Length: 637
Image (cartoon, rainbow, N blue to C red; front, top):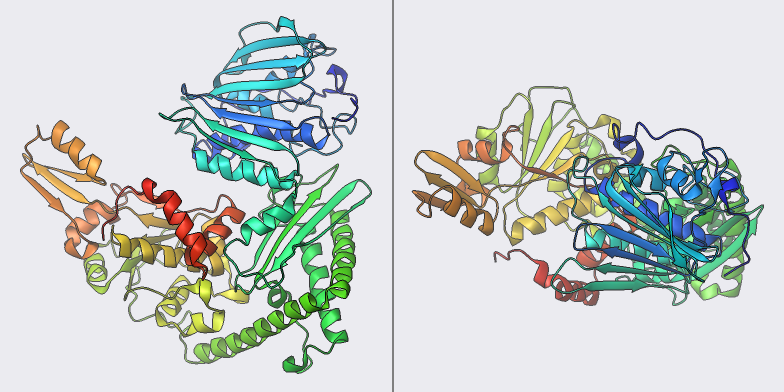
C-alpha cells in the first residue's frame, strides 16, 4: 500500500441534502427493477475500487447473504470517523446520509475516481431497509447502523484494531424495489470486468443463499491484456500476442489492448474510470481515428492496397474482427449525466490519438508479419463492403429495401404512428396466419418467417442482403442497415419475436437476436425488442380458464385452483396449434400477455456470448453447454 494521502473529515465536501432519493429513486440509480437493484452493489464496490486506484486497497469481498442482504468489504484506508466540522457529526455518518458528500470533488483524497457524482453510498443507504457500516482505522474498530437512510445508533467504538478497511452490509428496501433477488452471474460479470480493468486487485464474490456456498475470485495481473484474451477465447487470432501499450499525459492514464482475429464482427469496448462508456466518447473517437490513419499509412508505404484501386481503407474495414479494450483514467472526467455512458472531455481525444499512433506504429515496425496480416484482413473486408454496397444498390433499384414497397408477407397495421404500432415477427406461416386473424389490425402488424434465418455471425453484409427473410425484416422496420441505419425511421415502437416454446423456437429467437445485436444494436439498447411468452398449458375448470407458462405453474394451478381435478389440460406444442382467439388471449392482447424485454446490459459480455454461441469455434460452445446444462428448465426436443 502507498503512503497515506490526505483523507479525513476535512476532505469531505457537502453539496446538498438527501430528501428526493426515496421519492424518485430512478433519477439516481436508473430504475427500481433488477438493473437498479444491482446498481446498489456497484455503487458500494466502486468506492472500494477508488481506494484501489489510489493505491490503498488490494482485496474486495462481495457476499450475498441468506437474509437477502449484501456486504462489501475492502482493506482500504477505511471511511473517516473523525468529526465533520460543518455537520458536527462523524464523517462516516455524513457520507452515508448526505447526498453529494464525498472525498472525490477535490484531488487531495483521490487522484482518479469512478464515483464522481458522489451520490453512491448515501443513495444506497436511502434505498435500504437497513444498513450497517464497520470501519477499521486510526487504531480502532467502529460501527454505525441505519434504517432507510436515518441513523438508528451513534457511531460506536467496538475495540482496538491495527487493520484498516470498510465493511458495508445493506438490505434493499422491499417497498421501493420490484425485485430483491440478486443475480449471481450479473454480479460476476461486472466484478470480473473490474478485476480486468484494475490489474492486481483481487475481487471475491460469494453466494451463501443456496444449499451450497458458491464463490468466484478474480485477479488479473495482466489487466486488459487478459481481458482481450478472454473476449477472444472463441475466435481464431491472426497473431499470438495481444498488442498493448500505455501512457500518461497531464495526469490522464491511457491503456489500450487489442488483437485481430479472422472473425467478421468487431468488438471494441471503451472504459473511463472503470465505467463502461457504452455510448463511446472522445477516447473511442481518438482510438478509431488514429487506428484508421496508422493502418492506412502503413498499407500505403508498403503497397498493400493495390486491390482497392487506390482507395484507402475505412475504419470499419480495419476494425472487422478486431477485439480492443480502451481504458482511460481521468482526474476530472466529464460524463453525460449520472448514467455515465459517454465521455465528453475534449483533451482525451488528442492524448489517445497520440498514444495509438505511436504504439501501433512502433508495433507494426517491429512485427511486419502481423502488420501485413492485419492489413490484408482489412483489404478483404473492404472488398466485401464494396460488394455489399453494390448488392444494396441493386436491391434498392428493385425496390426491395425502399420504404415505399413493403414485403408482400407483411400484414401491416392501420396506424402510421410508430409510438402506437407494434410488429410481431412470427415463426412459421401457419402461426403467422393465426396471428393475422387474431391480432388487432389497428396497431398490430404481422410478419411471418418461413423457417430459420441466416446466422449473421458467420456472414458479411453482402450475404445478409441476399437473404430474403432478413430483407423482409429490414424493409418492414424501415430503419435501413449498416451505414444507413437510422433509428428515427423505425416504424414500430415494439418489435415482438413470437416463436414456439421449444428448441427450434429458441434457436430462431437466438438467430434474430444475433442479427439485431450485430446490425441493429440501437433497437436493443433502446428497449424496442421483446420476446413473447406464449403459455405451455391451458387449464379449464368449472367455466374458468387458466394459462400456465411452465410445468411448475401447471401443477400449482391444478392443485390450488382445480382441487387437483381439472376439467381439461391442453398442452400447446407450438403457436400453430392455437386458434386465432387463443393466440390473441394468451400472447397478443396487451391487457393479458407477458412480454420479456431484451436489453444489452453489458456489451462486452454480450459480444463474447454471441461469439461463443453463434461463431465457428466448437470447443467454447461445448464448454458453455457442459457448464450450464443443469440450468436448463426444459429441453423439448
